[in-house]
Length: 165
Image 1 (spheres, rainbow, N blue to C red):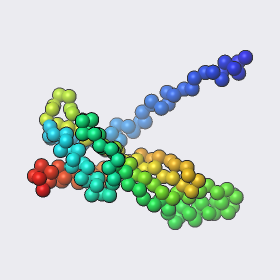
Image 2 (image 1 turned 180 degrees about the horizontal axis):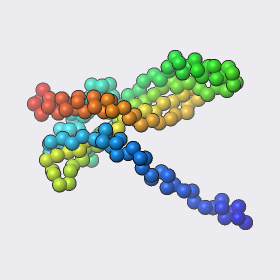
Image 3 (image 1 turned 90 degrees about the vertical axis):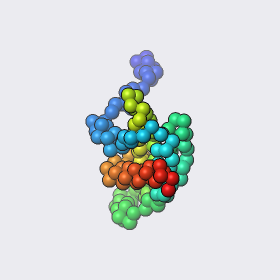
Image 4 (image 1 turned 90 degrees about the horizontal axis):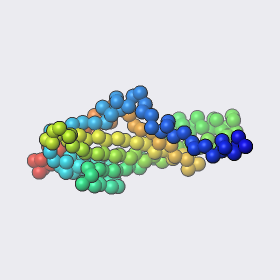
């Protein structure tokens, strides 16, 4: 009887709603504030930057301030192939090699409640890597230099867009 009752218990999803200890640092790296009241200009400039970087626009919604893009890359790395070959040879297990990766970008432009002349831009880069067994893993890209380079290019693009260049 205890087995039946235990089998009906709902799973604990609370771990999905816990923030990591680093979440504030991650948010700080992903977010910039711009001195403008023109969200459409920021989205347009962001679209231009990401397209210049080879991303394909998947979705954009100027009313919601949302932009979603992706770019595919080969994910095969020689050292990974050699290492996994040795594991397969020694352990008799084929754990597969990474073959393709998709970098997904999500960008949101939002207003600052107390200051309508400023907009917040938050961007995230996520890598989805699929291996030879068609198993995909997702990794949030956290290298600050990637975000810094993106925001440097966005600042230049905002200027160019404002000047209609």
